[in-house]
Image (cartoon, rainbow, N blue to C red; front, side):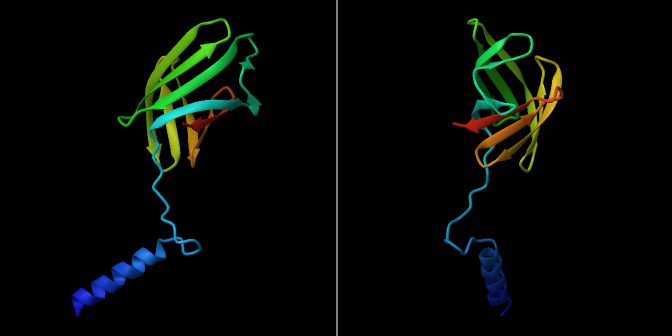
Length: 128
């Protein structure tokens, strides 16, 4: 009887976690991967900062071990590479750029990562 009751509770628990409207399984979000910068403060790339530097592309690579590498290509041909670590709490990230020496926060919704910097800039990345 106990075994039968345990099975019933397991089935009820699984059913409570499913999406009954279309019978699809909702996957657990995976954070590691490559994210391509799409906008800065709502403006698409290339983006020119106040100091006159123009950013053409930016790829943020988050690794399984909690480290990251960010590769930024500038209009003048230079490539800037920053690295650091990140910590995740559900879909919220704390990212510490050890190269530049600052920490910022980000949130992940589906495949879109939105980063908010201490300077007030908001960057929106799309996972590849």
